[in-house]
Image 1 (spheres, one colour):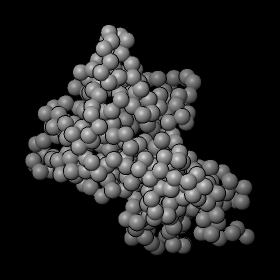
Image 2 (cartoon, rainbow, N blue to C red; image 1 turned 90 degrees about the horizontal axis):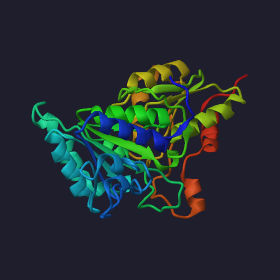
Image 3 (cartoon, one colour; image 1 turned 45 degrees about the vertical axis):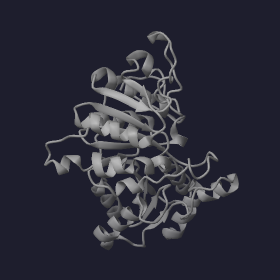
Image 4 (cartoon, rainbow, N blue to C red; image 1 turned 90 degrees about the vertical axis):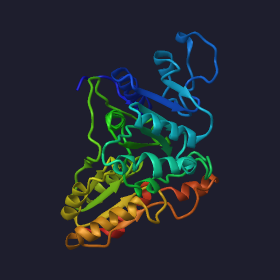
Amino acid sequence: MVDRKKVTYRQALNEALHEEMAFDENVFILGQDIAGGAQNKAPDEFDAWGGPFGVTKGLVGKYGKSRVRDTPITEGAIVGCAAGAAASGMRPIVELMFIDFLGFCLDQIMNQASPMRYMFGGKAKVPMVMRTMIGGGFQAAAQHSHSCHSLLVHLPGLKLVTPSTPYDAKGLLKSAIRDDDLVIFVEHKGLYDTKGPVPEEEYLLPLGKGEIVREGTDITIVAFSKMVLIAYEASVKLEQDDISVEVIDPRSMSPLDEELILNSVRKTGHLIVVDEDNPRCSIATDVVALASSKAFDSLNAAPKMLTPPHTPVPFSPELEKFYLPNADKLVELVKETVPAHA
Protein backbone atom coordinates (compact mmCIF):
# COMPACT_ATOMS: atom_id res chain seq x y z
CA MET A 1 0.00 0.00 0.00
CA VAL A 2 1.31 3.43 -0.94
CA ASP A 3 1.36 5.75 2.06
CA ARG A 4 -0.83 8.82 1.85
CA LYS A 5 -3.14 10.81 4.07
CA LYS A 6 -6.42 9.24 5.07
CA VAL A 7 -9.38 10.04 2.84
CA THR A 8 -13.06 10.32 3.65
CA TYR A 9 -15.67 7.73 2.78
CA ARG A 10 -17.12 10.27 0.32
CA GLN A 11 -13.74 10.79 -1.37
CA ALA A 12 -13.16 7.04 -1.62
CA LEU A 13 -16.47 6.58 -3.44
CA ASN A 14 -15.68 9.51 -5.73
CA GLU A 15 -12.28 8.00 -6.59
CA ALA A 16 -13.90 4.67 -7.43
CA LEU A 17 -16.36 6.37 -9.79
CA HIS A 18 -13.58 8.34 -11.50
CA GLU A 19 -11.45 5.25 -11.98
CA GLU A 20 -14.24 3.04 -13.31
CA MET A 21 -15.50 5.70 -15.74
CA ALA A 22 -11.96 6.05 -17.06
CA PHE A 23 -11.56 2.26 -17.22
CA ASP A 24 -14.76 1.52 -19.15
CA GLU A 25 -16.53 3.97 -21.47
CA ASN A 26 -19.77 2.00 -21.04
CA VAL A 27 -20.05 3.21 -17.44
CA PHE A 28 -22.39 6.16 -17.00
CA ILE A 29 -24.31 7.72 -14.11
CA LEU A 30 -27.96 8.68 -13.70
CA GLY A 31 -29.37 10.69 -10.81
CA GLN A 32 -30.79 13.89 -9.45
CA ASP A 33 -28.61 17.01 -9.06
CA ILE A 34 -25.45 15.24 -10.19
CA ALA A 35 -24.71 17.19 -13.40
CA GLY A 36 -25.69 20.79 -12.74
CA GLY A 37 -29.20 20.66 -14.16
CA ALA A 38 -29.74 22.79 -17.26
CA GLN A 39 -26.70 25.04 -16.78
CA ASN A 40 -25.37 26.35 -20.09
CA LYS A 41 -21.64 26.38 -19.47
CA ALA A 42 -18.54 25.36 -21.33
CA PRO A 43 -17.59 21.71 -20.68
CA ASP A 44 -14.62 22.67 -18.52
CA GLU A 45 -16.86 24.85 -16.34
CA PHE A 46 -19.46 22.23 -15.49
CA ASP A 47 -19.86 21.49 -11.83
CA ALA A 48 -22.71 20.40 -9.65
CA TRP A 49 -23.67 19.46 -6.16
CA GLY A 50 -22.64 15.91 -6.91
CA GLY A 51 -25.92 14.58 -5.58
CA PRO A 52 -27.24 15.33 -2.09
CA PHE A 53 -23.98 14.27 -0.42
CA GLY A 54 -21.39 15.36 -3.01
CA VAL A 55 -20.25 11.88 -4.02
CA THR A 56 -20.38 12.52 -7.78
CA LYS A 57 -18.91 16.02 -7.64
CA GLY A 58 -16.36 16.72 -10.39
CA LEU A 59 -17.43 13.90 -12.69
CA VAL A 60 -19.54 15.87 -15.16
CA GLY A 61 -16.71 18.28 -15.97
CA LYS A 62 -14.42 15.38 -16.85
CA TYR A 63 -16.80 13.00 -18.60
CA GLY A 64 -19.54 15.30 -19.88
CA LYS A 65 -23.30 15.28 -19.64
CA SER A 66 -23.68 12.28 -21.93
CA ARG A 67 -22.16 10.09 -19.19
CA VAL A 68 -23.26 12.02 -16.08
CA ARG A 69 -26.95 12.63 -16.60
CA ASP A 70 -29.33 14.62 -14.46
CA THR A 71 -32.80 13.10 -14.34
CA PRO A 72 -36.30 14.20 -13.36
CA ILE A 73 -37.51 13.23 -9.89
CA THR A 74 -38.97 9.93 -11.06
CA GLU A 75 -37.21 6.97 -9.52
CA GLY A 76 -39.15 4.37 -11.51
CA ALA A 77 -38.04 5.89 -14.81
CA ILE A 78 -34.43 6.25 -13.61
CA VAL A 79 -34.06 2.62 -12.52
CA GLY A 80 -36.06 1.32 -15.48
CA CYS A 81 -33.84 3.25 -17.89
CA ALA A 82 -30.75 1.83 -16.20
CA ALA A 83 -32.09 -1.73 -16.36
CA GLY A 84 -32.72 -1.40 -20.09
CA ALA A 85 -29.33 0.15 -20.70
CA ALA A 86 -27.61 -2.60 -18.70
CA ALA A 87 -29.41 -5.33 -20.62
CA SER A 88 -28.21 -3.62 -23.81
CA GLY A 89 -24.52 -3.69 -22.89
CA MET A 90 -23.99 -0.51 -20.87
CA ARG A 91 -22.94 -0.32 -17.20
CA PRO A 92 -25.17 2.28 -15.57
CA ILE A 93 -24.80 3.58 -12.01
CA VAL A 94 -28.03 4.90 -10.55
CA GLU A 95 -28.16 7.20 -7.56
CA LEU A 96 -31.33 6.74 -5.51
CA MET A 97 -31.10 9.70 -3.13
CA PHE A 98 -32.63 7.95 -0.14
CA ILE A 99 -33.63 4.32 0.30
CA ASP A 100 -36.94 5.64 1.65
CA PHE A 101 -37.92 6.22 -2.01
CA LEU A 102 -37.50 2.54 -2.84
CA GLY A 103 -41.21 2.04 -3.37
CA PHE A 104 -41.19 4.19 -6.49
CA CYS A 105 -38.79 1.82 -8.30
CA LEU A 106 -39.44 -1.53 -6.63
CA ASP A 107 -41.12 -3.01 -9.70
CA GLN A 108 -38.11 -2.21 -11.87
CA ILE A 109 -35.82 -3.85 -9.31
CA MET A 110 -37.96 -6.85 -8.32
CA ASN A 111 -39.61 -7.76 -11.61
CA GLN A 112 -37.14 -6.49 -14.22
CA ALA A 113 -33.49 -6.06 -13.25
CA SER A 114 -32.95 -8.73 -10.59
CA PRO A 115 -34.63 -11.79 -12.23
CA MET A 116 -33.65 -11.07 -15.84
CA ARG A 117 -30.55 -13.29 -16.00
CA TYR A 118 -32.48 -16.22 -14.51
CA MET A 119 -35.54 -15.69 -16.73
CA PHE A 120 -33.39 -15.78 -19.88
CA GLY A 121 -31.39 -18.83 -18.84
CA GLY A 122 -28.19 -16.90 -18.23
CA LYS A 123 -28.15 -15.37 -21.70
CA ALA A 124 -28.97 -11.86 -20.42
CA LYS A 125 -26.89 -9.74 -18.08
CA VAL A 126 -27.90 -6.67 -16.09
CA PRO A 127 -24.60 -5.09 -14.99
CA MET A 128 -25.93 -2.09 -13.09
CA VAL A 129 -25.32 -0.51 -9.70
CA MET A 130 -27.87 1.35 -7.63
CA ARG A 131 -26.23 3.53 -4.99
CA THR A 132 -28.57 4.52 -2.19
CA MET A 133 -28.39 6.08 1.26
CA ILE A 134 -29.64 4.87 4.64
CA GLY A 135 -29.46 6.04 8.22
CA GLY A 136 -30.93 8.22 10.93
CA GLY A 137 -29.36 10.66 13.33
CA PHE A 138 -29.94 13.84 11.33
CA GLN A 139 -33.51 14.76 12.37
CA ALA A 140 -34.67 14.23 8.79
CA ALA A 141 -37.89 12.48 9.89
CA ALA A 142 -39.30 9.18 8.69
CA GLN A 143 -39.30 9.83 4.95
CA HIS A 144 -35.54 10.47 4.76
CA SER A 145 -34.04 8.44 7.62
CA HIS A 146 -34.99 4.81 7.26
CA SER A 147 -32.66 1.86 6.83
CA CYS A 148 -35.00 -0.55 5.08
CA HIS A 149 -32.30 -2.50 3.24
CA SER A 150 -33.67 -5.84 4.48
CA LEU A 151 -36.51 -5.43 1.99
CA LEU A 152 -33.92 -5.87 -0.76
CA VAL A 153 -32.10 -8.77 0.91
CA HIS A 154 -35.33 -10.72 0.46
CA LEU A 155 -35.07 -10.53 -3.35
CA PRO A 156 -33.06 -13.16 -5.27
CA GLY A 157 -30.99 -12.20 -8.28
CA LEU A 158 -29.31 -9.13 -6.85
CA LYS A 159 -26.37 -8.38 -4.59
CA LEU A 160 -26.47 -5.95 -1.67
CA VAL A 161 -23.29 -4.35 -0.34
CA THR A 162 -22.85 -2.36 2.90
CA PRO A 163 -19.31 -0.95 3.28
CA SER A 164 -18.36 0.55 6.63
CA THR A 165 -14.94 2.10 5.87
CA PRO A 166 -13.45 4.23 3.09
CA TYR A 167 -11.19 1.32 2.10
CA ASP A 168 -14.14 -1.04 1.77
CA ALA A 169 -16.28 1.60 0.05
CA LYS A 170 -13.81 2.10 -2.78
CA GLY A 171 -12.85 -1.53 -3.29
CA LEU A 172 -16.40 -2.80 -3.16
CA LEU A 173 -17.83 -0.08 -5.42
CA LYS A 174 -15.26 -0.85 -8.10
CA SER A 175 -16.14 -4.54 -7.89
CA ALA A 176 -19.86 -3.73 -7.97
CA ILE A 177 -19.48 -1.69 -11.15
CA ARG A 178 -17.63 -4.56 -12.86
CA ASP A 179 -20.14 -7.19 -11.68
CA ASP A 180 -22.60 -8.58 -14.23
CA ASP A 181 -25.61 -8.51 -11.91
CA LEU A 182 -27.64 -5.78 -10.26
CA VAL A 183 -25.76 -4.58 -7.18
CA ILE A 184 -27.46 -2.40 -4.57
CA PHE A 185 -24.73 -0.34 -2.93
CA VAL A 186 -25.87 0.96 0.47
CA GLU A 187 -24.13 3.98 2.00
CA HIS A 188 -24.89 5.27 5.51
CA LYS A 189 -25.23 9.04 5.67
CA GLY A 190 -23.31 9.05 8.93
CA LEU A 191 -20.21 7.58 7.26
CA TYR A 192 -19.51 10.13 4.52
CA ASP A 193 -17.12 12.24 6.61
CA THR A 194 -15.38 9.34 8.36
CA LYS A 195 -11.74 8.86 7.34
CA GLY A 196 -9.48 5.89 6.78
CA PRO A 197 -6.45 4.71 4.79
CA VAL A 198 -7.06 4.00 1.10
CA PRO A 199 -4.19 2.89 -1.17
CA GLU A 200 -3.38 4.87 -4.28
CA GLU A 201 -2.84 1.76 -6.38
CA GLU A 202 -5.87 -0.02 -7.79
CA TYR A 203 -7.53 -2.74 -5.74
CA LEU A 204 -10.81 -4.65 -5.79
CA LEU A 205 -12.62 -6.37 -2.93
CA PRO A 206 -14.74 -9.48 -3.56
CA LEU A 207 -18.49 -9.16 -3.07
CA GLY A 208 -19.85 -11.51 -0.43
CA LYS A 209 -16.61 -11.81 1.55
CA GLY A 210 -16.66 -10.45 5.11
CA GLU A 211 -13.94 -9.38 7.52
CA ILE A 212 -12.98 -9.91 11.14
CA VAL A 213 -12.66 -6.31 12.35
CA ARG A 214 -11.51 -7.29 15.84
CA GLU A 215 -10.68 -10.75 17.12
CA GLY A 216 -12.15 -12.00 20.38
CA THR A 217 -13.09 -15.13 22.29
CA ASP A 218 -16.14 -14.43 24.49
CA ILE A 219 -18.83 -13.16 22.12
CA THR A 220 -19.39 -12.48 18.41
CA ILE A 221 -20.95 -9.21 17.32
CA VAL A 222 -22.09 -9.13 13.69
CA ALA A 223 -22.67 -5.56 12.55
CA PHE A 224 -23.53 -3.87 9.27
CA SER A 225 -22.62 -0.48 7.78
CA LYS A 226 -22.25 2.26 10.43
CA MET A 227 -23.10 -0.24 13.15
CA VAL A 228 -19.62 -1.72 12.66
CA LEU A 229 -18.17 1.47 14.18
CA ILE A 230 -20.57 1.17 17.11
CA ALA A 231 -19.63 -2.48 17.60
CA TYR A 232 -15.94 -1.66 17.59
CA GLU A 233 -16.45 1.15 20.11
CA ALA A 234 -18.37 -1.21 22.37
CA SER A 235 -15.68 -3.89 22.06
CA VAL A 236 -13.04 -1.43 23.32
CA LYS A 237 -15.20 -0.50 26.31
CA LEU A 238 -15.92 -4.15 27.11
CA GLU A 239 -12.23 -4.99 27.09
CA GLN A 240 -11.97 -2.94 30.29
CA ASP A 241 -14.39 -5.43 31.87
CA ASP A 242 -12.32 -8.36 30.64
CA ILE A 243 -14.86 -9.32 27.96
CA SER A 244 -13.23 -10.27 24.66
CA VAL A 245 -15.42 -9.34 21.68
CA GLU A 246 -15.05 -10.55 18.11
CA VAL A 247 -16.49 -8.00 15.67
CA ILE A 248 -17.56 -9.29 12.26
CA ASP A 249 -18.34 -7.01 9.30
CA PRO A 250 -19.93 -9.15 6.56
CA ARG A 251 -19.52 -6.20 4.13
CA SER A 252 -22.33 -7.67 2.03
CA MET A 253 -25.80 -8.69 3.12
CA SER A 254 -26.44 -10.64 -0.08
CA PRO A 255 -24.53 -12.84 -0.62
CA LEU A 256 -23.81 -13.26 3.08
CA ASP A 257 -20.50 -14.68 4.28
CA GLU A 258 -22.14 -17.42 6.34
CA GLU A 259 -19.00 -19.40 7.09
CA LEU A 260 -17.22 -16.38 8.57
CA ILE A 261 -20.13 -15.79 10.93
CA LEU A 262 -20.62 -19.44 11.85
CA ASN A 263 -16.93 -20.06 12.52
CA SER A 264 -16.88 -17.09 14.88
CA VAL A 265 -20.03 -18.18 16.71
CA ARG A 266 -18.65 -21.70 17.10
CA LYS A 267 -15.55 -20.17 18.68
CA THR A 268 -17.21 -17.71 21.07
CA GLY A 269 -20.52 -19.43 21.85
CA HIS A 270 -22.41 -16.13 21.96
CA LEU A 271 -23.91 -13.86 19.30
CA ILE A 272 -25.38 -10.37 19.05
CA VAL A 273 -26.39 -8.85 15.70
CA VAL A 274 -26.47 -5.06 15.37
CA ASP A 275 -28.30 -3.34 12.53
CA GLU A 276 -30.20 -0.09 12.00
CA ASP A 277 -33.05 -1.68 10.06
CA ASN A 278 -36.38 -2.49 11.71
CA PRO A 279 -36.31 -5.77 13.65
CA ARG A 280 -39.13 -7.76 12.01
CA CYS A 281 -38.13 -10.02 9.06
CA SER A 282 -34.74 -8.30 8.88
CA ILE A 283 -31.10 -9.13 8.16
CA ALA A 284 -30.60 -9.26 11.94
CA THR A 285 -33.26 -11.97 12.34
CA ASP A 286 -31.75 -13.78 9.36
CA VAL A 287 -28.30 -13.94 10.98
CA VAL A 288 -29.82 -15.05 14.28
CA ALA A 289 -31.69 -17.81 12.43
CA LEU A 290 -28.48 -18.81 10.64
CA ALA A 291 -26.60 -19.25 13.92
CA SER A 292 -29.52 -20.98 15.63
CA SER A 293 -29.97 -23.51 12.83
CA LYS A 294 -26.35 -24.21 11.89
CA ALA A 295 -24.36 -23.55 15.10
CA PHE A 296 -26.93 -24.43 17.75
CA ASP A 297 -24.67 -26.92 19.54
CA SER A 298 -22.01 -24.23 19.97
CA LEU A 299 -24.30 -21.61 21.50
CA ASN A 300 -24.12 -21.05 25.24
CA ALA A 301 -26.98 -18.54 25.24
CA ALA A 302 -29.75 -17.43 22.92
CA PRO A 303 -28.56 -15.07 20.17
CA LYS A 304 -29.75 -11.48 20.57
CA MET A 305 -30.29 -8.43 18.36
CA LEU A 306 -29.75 -4.73 18.87
CA THR A 307 -31.95 -2.81 16.45
CA PRO A 308 -34.30 0.17 16.59
CA PRO A 309 -37.84 -0.53 17.80
CA HIS A 310 -40.40 -1.49 15.18
CA THR A 311 -41.55 2.08 14.51
CA PRO A 312 -40.94 4.79 11.90
CA VAL A 313 -37.86 6.94 12.54
CA PRO A 314 -38.94 9.81 14.85
CA PHE A 315 -38.23 13.45 14.04
CA SER A 316 -37.75 14.56 17.65
CA PRO A 317 -34.00 14.66 18.49
CA GLU A 318 -34.51 12.98 21.85
CA LEU A 319 -36.78 10.29 20.45
CA GLU A 320 -34.43 9.65 17.55
CA LYS A 321 -31.51 9.32 19.96
CA PHE A 322 -33.52 6.75 21.92
CA TYR A 323 -34.53 4.99 18.70
CA LEU A 324 -31.03 4.39 17.28
CA PRO A 325 -28.59 1.68 18.44
CA ASN A 326 -25.44 2.98 20.14
CA ALA A 327 -22.33 1.64 21.85
CA ASP A 328 -23.68 2.02 25.39
CA LYS A 329 -26.79 0.00 24.57
CA LEU A 330 -24.60 -2.65 23.01
CA VAL A 331 -22.29 -2.81 26.03
CA GLU A 332 -25.27 -3.43 28.32
CA LEU A 333 -26.66 -6.12 26.04
CA VAL A 334 -23.31 -7.90 25.92
CA LYS A 335 -23.07 -7.86 29.71
CA GLU A 336 -26.54 -9.38 29.89
CA THR A 337 -25.50 -12.11 27.46
CA VAL A 338 -22.00 -13.09 28.54
CA PRO A 339 -21.48 -14.47 32.07
CA ALA A 340 -19.18 -12.40 34.25
CA HIS A 341 -15.65 -13.71 34.47
CA ALA A 342 -14.72 -15.24 37.82
